[in-house]
Length: 606
Ligand code: ADP
Ligand code: ASP
Ligand code: MG
Figure 1 (cartoon, protein in one colour):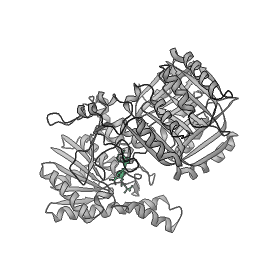
Figure 2 (cartoon, rainbow, N blue to C red):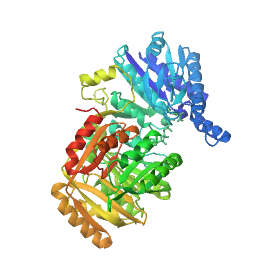
Figure 3 (spheres, rainbow, N blue to C red):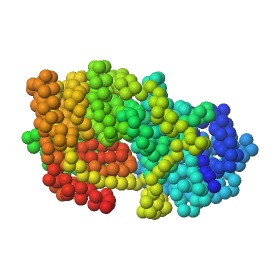
Figure 4 (cartoon, rainbow, N blue to C red):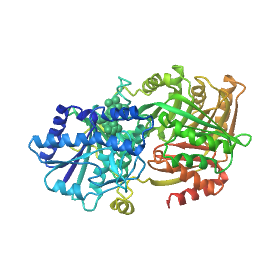
């Protein structure tokens, strides 16, 4: 038996007409022989309006009551959708999140799903209904209504698909998940910001996870975590037409042909720096566990290479979490003899692509595009398949367009498109690696659904590090440095850059050992031409340890657990990189094996 989960976003249920259109779509799927679950969001801008309403009452609405309020938006939609389907002559029944047992933790306004019971859903389906479920909401163990964070209806839909696919009681042999929205698929970047953006026919889970986590609002990033973790293929498509949308599926060889598949922007970030923290083990742990305890998602963490026993730690948070972050950091910093500074009105621009793993010159291309637009880079972080830069908010959209253009994202990619076109009626479906027994077991008891899954901890001692100290703060510097490196044919891996207070920055990047002395020479040469006040060092004795999995960044506890395990063994961290799928730290070479062991133990990976 097959099941289709159809999710309709806010604009797809904004008016009575649209609700009727969505209802007809659900009925068509049912008539085609599938069982159907429909997940709906609040209508149109309802959620924004409810938030505004709360703000009219108080500046700081208590989060429990906020959830009580916000959940009403979806409740309106489910009732109307059930009426619509029934008026078209088909049985339907609506349920709130609580009614079908979507149990979450108690972090109001950004709760995570713990488990979903399928019993009531299955029964309603068996009785012949199209089942309508309110997206975005759940209930905690004390029956308080919770919500999953803005855009969270996607996560409800994919979680339901996952649970119906893997629950041993579930009768379904195939489960599909369709996300209906106001665009006809995932584009190379937000088409509302960059009109020349192009629709992507298919994209891998990892790429979509990274893109969503760096601002591609078309999907809630946590929904992609579920899709990846539980092997649910997704299709994002238009609720207004029958055009084939974008498939989100496991990674395929052809996806790696191009270095970059998409770009994204987060316009409202804030940068926080903690200046002059003691450069010794345990400091990152103290800082990031305090932040994690408040469930604040930090991003773009950079830690400068220490000098004079002091180091600076910088990171970004969403603007709306800045005050909470500062409030908890100030006393902590005072305790450490450090200072906290911050900067609002910064935007983060990122490029993502599975092909980045094997292509050279990606960083150079991005930095040159920014330099040509005279955009200054305030911070850089990279992961295996992502480069993010922080720029002035005023430069944000121009930077995004420049980067989109530089990677020729607007141009069709015939080979890629060919490769995943429908072949003999079968769409490029997951040629997923078979699930291990152990994973199947874990899924079978779908408890703790949204827990992090760490799949691997690796030690890499093949790289050395170049650090540029006191690099001047003006456009074009990174572009010149990485042009020199790219011209020398050297592959760069991890890059971090952070500006210090006096208008100078520190830039570090890793290169293979064999290229370290050449990279040093080339970079020294570049810096001599740019500014003799800066200086460059090379460090061969570093080890990198990576923890890979799903949801590494949005699970605020990952960094905490990771830094905690290292702190406990007295291992100092000298560089950090974070992404949705991998967190990496650099430690001294002699600590590599111990760091590996500590992290394997902390994440229970053999
Ligand atoms: P829904 O209410 O259906 O969930 P959203 O507003 O959450 O819809 O998501 C759809 C919107 O996401 C689009 O209208 C588009 O402006 C925006 N968007 C951002 N990045 C992208 C992207 N890379 N591809 C497509 N749409 C994007
Ligand atoms: N209505 C919620 C929001 O606007 C959830 C969603 O649309 O996915 O964020
Ligand atoms: Mg959405």
